[in-house]
Image 1 (cartoon, rainbow, N blue to C red):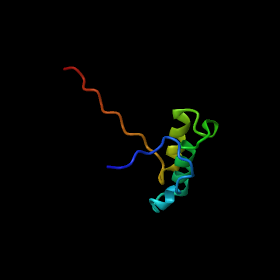
Image 2: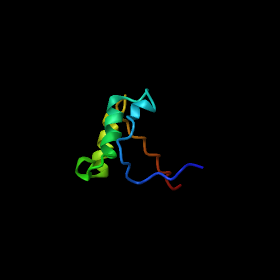
Image 3: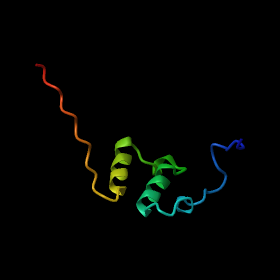
Image 4: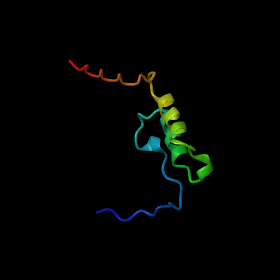
Length: 73
């Protein structure tokens, strides 16, 4: 069992790159912004964060194809 963690940490957390060195700088910046202590510095909408997530992808984002709707016989 882990000890309870306070909702508001008294000190700055370790940089995300310390946990996973394979993360890109864009991904680290994205997570840092999403978890900023100041609400005004965070993403203001899901759409804003979605755009940042897509921008952080290493290759261009291609949405999945919609399955074809079967036609009635």
